[in-house]
Image (tube, rainbow over all chains, first blue to last red):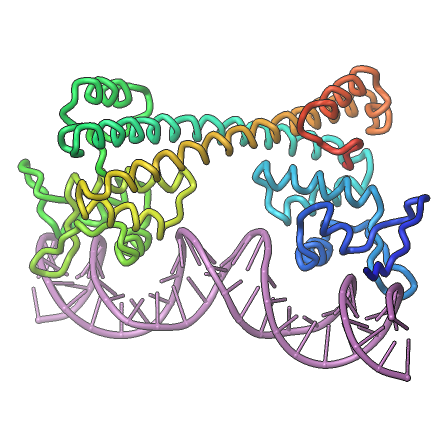
Length: 163
Length: 163
DNA sequence: CATTGACATAGAGTTAACTCTAAATAGTAT
DNA sequence: ATACTATTTAGAGTTAACTCTATGTCAATG
């Protein structure tokens, strides 16, 4: 087990392989992130091997969160640049998080609408299997009531849904 | 205003331009979907122009829903193929919707976790602006209590978050 | 009958975010 | 010293889902 970077009890740093294990990201991806300016704090030892600090791991966690919130890599880089500029960019960063929250709220609302439609389909097909055919399910009283409820709701899933 | 396809009171069909207006999709995208097998019911008139029926529009609505649920185009094509095969594929289609519902539930739960982290950041930066610096906000009692709450929760947002 | 605008096809180009390849160097184990 | 594994770089390749370009047809308008 060759570990190029000595990671003693003093926790000087982690090799790229250790970060791969801890984060689940590939070494390729870690180098790609660095090239894209997402990890400006990663250092190299005298042999040119990357040494990741605990702070770098925390940044990776933050990057994952921002990615999951829907941010693109170049937008994450912008955020990191703002961070490096210090307190003069507090406003920009706050606005970014406010926008992220709004985007997440919109996305969750959107997913809820999709969920309603998919759940209806699940019920429809469960009934279809019980009755032996999709046509029979389509004519089913309970199904028709459910469908009506869905169609009369504010979002307009089509009057009649294909499939 | 030349409309190649006569759309009389009997509603024989829609031109691609009309479908563009109704769906917000581009003509390019509509042709691309068709090429990918997503619209096998679209017909052409004697001049080779596409004629979309109301059913085709319903399919487009269904396709949008499946896309929003996270399905890829080739998976949507599979669903449409199952549909065309009739009641012998009811089980496969039900399973697809069951899987979609589970995926949507997981996605919504994931987004909720991200939302908690982003909301914390929003609070942190609001406090930072009020106090004049990020360091001051980091040492703030209320912020520290919030952070502790977030870190002690089942999901493990890092012990200390960068940025 | 020439122009215009919508539409057709085939195929090339774009974008984001990886993902991989090749060839070289570094570190560890025996 | 040798073998083996981890890491490095530059740059090419991949994938999904469009998106656009070039060129040509067709129908209605002036």
